[in-house]
Image (cartoon, rainbow, N blue to C red):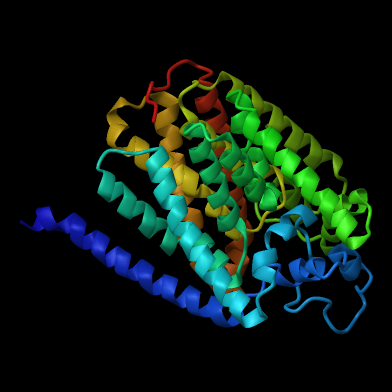
Length: 397
């Protein structure tokens, strides 16, 4: 009797804990979220170049945008925020918080639809609990970031492409490219699988929107394209676990080494993707999620991209005995990475922020261990997805 109700009871308690954490983050978002780029989108709506505005006022005592934010998203993406930018700031802040909740729920439901696992309701419930209780999603919600928004549109593009709706897939992929640092690498799956129409369509949409923004603001398209990169160069802060962030934290000022590392990783992932099993999109997307986080600037809240590896873990869990060799090792490493970065890291960061002595002293070793585990997981994923040793289990979603 106890064993029969133990799992549902545990899931209920975890669900209640996730709801409490979610409520706290949502309340913070209603009053204090600031990172949703409402200001740059509103400036562009009024015919102003947000990048020139920001760069021309670096020494100003009063922020250019309210709330203060550095505009690092493309102008073609900011146009997509115009329905949100027409709202007054307090209303826009609340609307974005609700939108993040909806996109989070949609992300789980569509991934579950695309890659169903055995024990459907349990895997779905576990996915909801894990995402909504995980620090990356809660931070995205609390500060108003765009990772969930972009990932949500990307999964819509996958779903539309699978249903043969090329127009919806292209439009959704174009919206997903708003946060291109996450979704460009993920979009490699369309190229590897020979599904070019959504990519070409999304590219055409962004070219058209960039041209429109250039005419609208009286700027050159090249200035608008380079604007986010110029702003990012000025901001110039270390990323979390990406190769360039690691180089900055190690004090390696020359760019040659991180560029070489990113190039080598890109080549290895592309080779693995070309060798991947044609029907195993989930494993390839899982690897591309790790790759996306590794090669471009990211902060810890962007680890919400591990929602795709979460579904890989859930999908393979019932077939654990059928997994062989590297795939079994990769499953374990991904499960540990998810638990570590979504649930363990946040308390560590809080203790570090409160200057608890032993945590501050041990943190360099902790950070090094996190980075080592992340890249070891990526390396095993390259070997697994590429099936380099021909020993992985033949399990497809």
